[in-house]
Length: 246
Image (cartoon, rainbow, N blue to C red; front, side, top):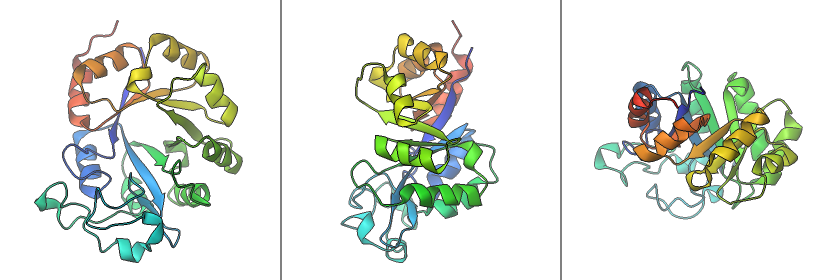
């Protein structure tokens, strides 16, 4: 029976502001198997961890990440929107995160947020940092952008690449392989046993997002999914311990 790994989606994002160090630290302390986070690129080509291209939802700033230098972004409050006790929380660079992460025994999933704004050379910036911090073999790169997957494959054909999708497409595993991916990450509603078996026949790990309800966790674990992305890793870990295998 495949052990379904628990990835903290943007960190423990139900307990702390998403994609911030408090959320990552809570995920680590809870015992999550891995962390999932999102990468955007600043005006001065610094990879930073935010889900949205626009700053409005998760900071006190306005406009787009790509229009600010990191020095400017660093001044923003990235925590108060969640709770006042996080008011001193700032946007994290990928490098600062990797510096912290490299001492942890965890898996990493980096989602390149380049399906809306296709940041030039984002793949190379991310790759170079992963090499610098010795995290290449420990990391899966995911993206909704099929061209980005193909570009990353050209940089290093051995890295784990995941095609990320919420769309029902005929023979998804074959399509993923065609664009250079060797992993598949799908929205929960696309999950079925047949798709999981198709992936496993190809030695292609399949992971599911975003899985927060016990009934969803149960289905993922019973269908032998390789991993789930959840905002509540502490609950998913407790639940995994009590779900009987079929």
